[in-house]
Image 1 (cartoon, rainbow, N blue to C red):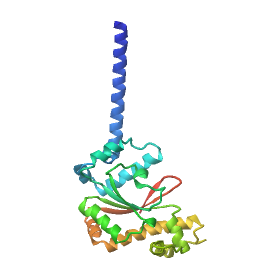
Image 2: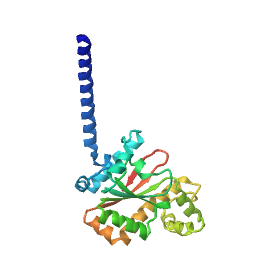
Image 3: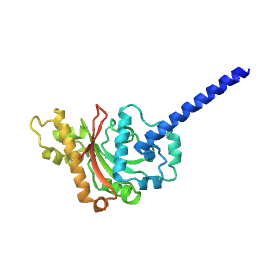
Image 4: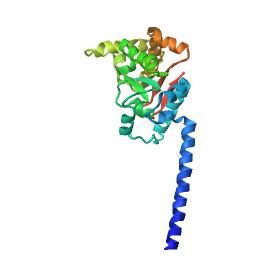
Length: 244
């Protein structure tokens, strides 16, 4: 019996040591990435200490976890309860409605980490601008990220001049991007290289529109309180490319 207990003690100590080493390794990794956004119950103090550039780095790290198949383990019900009485999102991500491009998943965020706005073709009207102003000026978010994506159906529709109910007016807002895209070759919706080039131009025009039509966001960016950035999500590779 004493030998059995001694063996069990050695096993327990060995297991404890392994667990301690693993916990230390996880702590080091989280610290290197900045672990604040790895948990949904982000506090105001944690969010306010972060710079816009640090938040963008967290986005890049989250996308890397997504692409490598190693997202944060999340208890979504716990996250829902933790944020029920308050939220301190670090950013607002404005993207397309495409079902294959959910911002929270591809950037590996949890409940309460970011505001998420979505419109086909990610074109910003006054309602979206008002939502961004609320996110940054009122709620304290520090990044506005406009995210386009490859093979975008709204971009294809704008290229082809599709007319369908209220969609007609929406696609008309993307036409300036089609016309402004410099491209030598087939300028049709069947040419995915051209479609993606237009999508990229559309992101830059959306950012310009945000700065032009929202003095609130423009002033916040000028003071360094927020950063307005653009990105493109590749549906095939899972990569989020942050645009210059």
